[in-house]
Length: 368
Ligand code: SF4
Image (cartoon, rainbow, N blue to C red; front, side, top):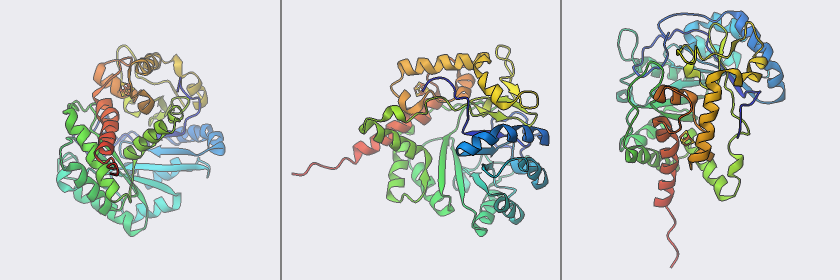
């Protein structure tokens, strides 16, 4: 894997900056403001992605803020310019989902991913603007999805990996009925400055325990564990070089005003005296394909590529990780050309070690 691809596999879109919740670990800077995406931005993106969607699988991920806070009417006007080959996804806190939203998802064939951090007592960080717990509204939204037979993925943030937690979470998500589960160990980024440094054994133990729980009942696609197993299998059969894409996916994030941040959605809305506002252009003035073709003209991206190459030269986990995310380097190191972050320790290195530890602990005993 070298350089950045000129064609992404998905685009992240911000229909509004607003979120109706105020979770304590959130990285978003303008989540109290309702800055809505005009239709002209969606039209420009739709025109750009059409040829990509015709030749391969292509997705638009409606993110936020909380995308449902834009309202059904506005979201419908933003969806309208896209052709039928484009897959649409929403990443939502689920609190606004009701029967009408479920009908909207079905009508527009939108795939839904909900954010929920496990059982009630694990959701203390999820609060509304008045500081009141959001859990009951989250599960009410998920109940509506289930009533309507709408499949959904779940995304769970883990603030503090500790013994017993992985098994508890896996059992909860089995009952919740999601078909895919992603686990994010909380990250220090954006306006969230809480530390994400944890004892190595606790994080490795968390991932090992999660694999064990999944293997007992593998009904859910467990995103991180499946990535790891795919990589381990490729090492064993000599195809590890083929696991990472040939080039980095540029992951364009199109903010409400049409500005484009590449590689890390978490950088949108921030600025730095050295790097400016991290944007690489605006779809209202420059076609998205042109913005992507000139990605390396953005100074921080050149610095990030230097960091990825430093990872390739120094880190034994590079073949699995590919250099992780730009935003984690920036928010942890203040620049992009460093290598190891607490994020990559938690979510790459200790993930792979946890999966391997599980395998070592369950080696078949030799026949005697
Ligand atoms: S694990 Fe960390 S140091 Fe290693 S390649 Fe990934 S980001 Fe770089």
